[in-house]
Length: 340
Image 1 (cartoon, rainbow, N blue to C red):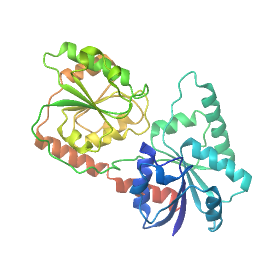
Image 2: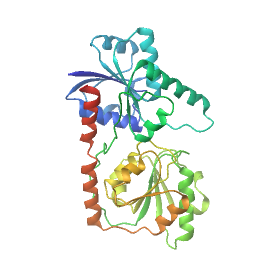
Image 3: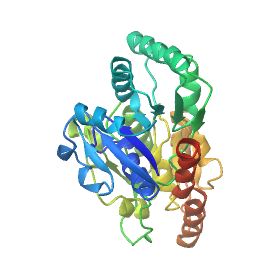
Image 4: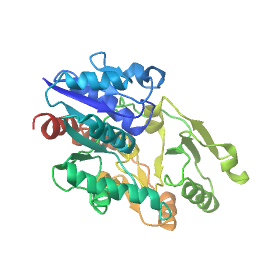
């Protein structure tokens, strides 16, 4: 049985943390797993969701002691902070282990020079150390290879449908548009407001917009739209929102592997999306997904959007779920990391 040490900053409810929780559960019968975090994981949102077969801890002394018990264990570093943390530890303590960098996503803005220099350093270091790299998206791989990241022993492994939300048929209620994402420039929060404002100006009876995600406040909304937009915050009933929405609006400027598109597609929900990360890859064979190149095109698609039948939505949803089955992701991890 292969031993894996996952190193991740925390177990709060972020994309990488949620994905690790599902992946570690799926691997628990075929691997022995440890998860090391920078602080006590018991304080984090996802702690109670992890499989009891997985050992969670935050003591550096324990990390070093456990690693020494195994011959050439696999160390998987999730995201940049974990990479810097472990590589520094590896040099100081001369740790012998097989190391995998799990890079979820990144895109720095033009003025973030220090961050780009740090990325260039990591790229050169990856070649010297000959680390193995897993990317969550083709866009992430292309971006990092521009900064000289090693091109050997790398693999793109998509998340696919990792949440596996139970399918629900829509119930009769007032139709609405749906946006899921935190308030953030890279998520296109300003784009969303601009698009919806144009839509409301042109549509005689505009649909209400529901926003799920943290960071949104009433002062982010123009006064004329406050009665048309409902801010939900973080929610636990995503399947109900996906099942009953008229369409999902996706406005990101930057993404790795946008899980929200996979989740919405698994309910047969019409999607209008800007091009970001691997969004086009996800939607390329999805008949109810529309990729747009401008705000104007986005608004046109929204105004002319046709509502599919309940039966067609279900057919599309079930087909998509089979195509993006998470078992394929687990097998790719086994093949690339554990069995080699």
